[in-house]
Image (cartoon, chains in turn yellow, purple):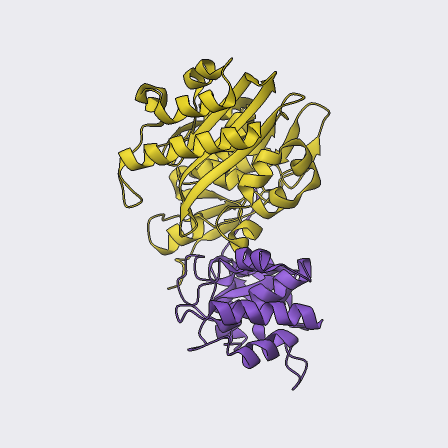
Length: 284
Length: 159
């Protein structure tokens, strides 16, 4: 089945892109790789008169290390994030998660900016990015702003992106010296049922500091900060036990939902298991 | 203010041949290849980037041509299954698929071949596991996976 007719706008500057998206409102959609958008248009779930192609904006294809943070342009593909030497060196947790996105064709075409703006809960990149305390750079005609990814993600298919605003880049810091990380996921036909990421600093056989994030089982991925605080000072074995058997309220913020991929109870069980495995892998 | 266009001029190299024409912006690469270029080796199937039947290469990268807008290929090299053989001489991958019976109904085969070709471009000697992971995005409903994998590893060994 063919796509309905639309018009293509290819702005060369951020100001032009934001102005066009603001002016056209609901008639237009921001477009980058198209891996999520084009199937939705074909299925009639998204109807649009205009696509505003963001791939010609300055800097959106760049991966840059500034000495403190890695800046990843919005149009950088998953395949590039999986293979880029800077990503593998500074954000190996993200590179590992990117290896699992969709399939090799989706990774060659789909972009990090599109992935984050679509905010499909069944996605992998945001979970490791939360561990890295990532921020996103947004811009509108009134100027730029930088927002924590944790605040940008609002719910299923919902973000803090305003009408007439574009996402230009995501920034993330490497883990501090001596930390290690691991990513785990369970998938059903490319689509992650649950994912989990852990980063940890082990000192004298005990957990000195830890970060945990999990996604896909509810509206959006979350850091599990209360659980993190309870793991500090424990041995890796005791920490894994607490993740597996600890009180359910540690995971309440994930708001697991029952759907075709499983019941909320099952998904929470899987998430606990993946988190414990990620922690043990990072500690090993 | 940037112009809003319904169609754009397109110049691509398709299997080594130059092609130019005006295309509507909503035209997918699959529609361009099958309907205007009359290259019908590339198959339409799931239309949602899951099955891999429509796999073609853009500058060496495999993509789902069903969900790739044709105008994006401007200035790029497109390779389809018709471009694999050298005249009557089949590509080593094609020969291996024939030898191992790496197809039953054959509908997914063009996509399998193009995904396999892309793999060997970036990883000329893949392990079984590496090949299986790369090819996991190409579905064969007849279940010829063992023969497909064997064909890829044999073609890699031969080259």
